[in-house]
Length: 131
Image (cartoon, rainbow, N blue to C red; front, side, top):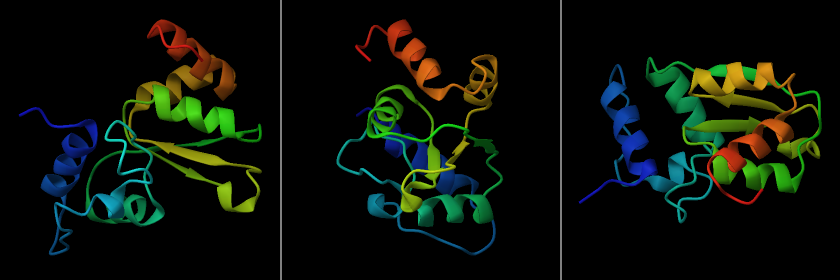
């Protein structure tokens, strides 16, 4: 049976965990904001903190100059194929920061002059998904 994207990443997180910290493998709600959509890779705060402190998995911080909107969050859901965490949603979406677990997104976002909406639109067009 094929694993879902969430299961693949969760297995990697748990196999890379160092020390004596353990999280139950079945705890999807711990890691994922949307555990019902198994393609959604947006991390919860708890999952993000655990990964950063308990594994050696690299992540990159990107400070966004633009406000995040609901359409941008939906595009993130559709187009990002590696885990990511969004901070700033609690404060009416101002000065958000996204941590990516794939350096390619950081590089491509820089090539798009930090315009996350344009980058996500280009990703969706490349994958033949309507933005």
